Length: 218
Picture 1 (tube, rainbow, N blue to C red):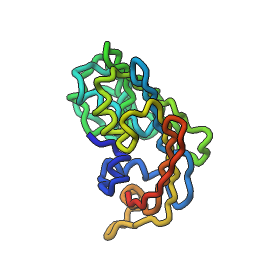
Picture 2 (tube, helix red, strand yellow):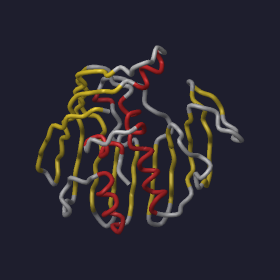
Picture 3 (cartoon, rainbow, N blue to C red):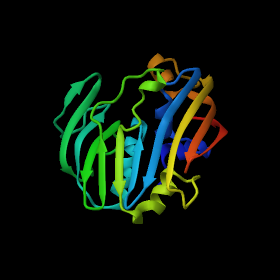
Picture 4 (tube, one colour):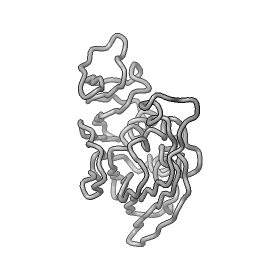
C-alpha cells in the first residue's frame, strides 16, 4: 500500500488523499503530517491524526486482527446503530474485522496483538493553524521487525534502509485554490476544490537534517 502522503508527493493524488487538504486555505502551514519511527527490538511509530486511516489499513492488510474503538462516518450506515455528533455518525466497535465498515471518514481504532499494537486517540482535533498544538502522538504503532519492509514502503519510502530513527514533518505552502467547474454549491466547492502549492518535507534521520521542496496539487 501507499500512504495518502506518498501518493500526493509522488504526483498521484486521488479522492482519498485530497480529503486531508480540504481544511487548508491559502497560506503557510508549518509542522503538519507528523510521522516518526524508532527501531529497537521492535519498531515504534508515532504520527499525527491524519495517518489514522492508513495505519488501520496497513495493519488490516498485513495481519488478520480484530479492531476496537470508534468509527466516524459522514453518512448513516445501513443496519448499524450509532449516534450523531457534530455532523458525524459515531459507531462503537469491539473485536471487529471491519469488513462491514468501508469508505468511512475516520477509523479511531486500537489493536492489541502479539506482533502488532495500534493505539489511536478517540477524538479528532479541531481545525486550527497553531502548529505547536498538533499532537505528534495521536497514533502509535508497535510492530515486529519483520513488518519493516512494508512499513517503509508505505510511510518511510525515502528514508535509508538502515536508518534507526527518523522524525518527519511537513510545511504546506498553499498558493492557489482550484475551483471545480460547473459547481455552484458552496459546500461542494469547498470539498472538491484542489489545493496547489509546495510541500517542504523535513526529515531528521539518525541526527542528520535534510529537507526538500515538492510541487503538489491535491
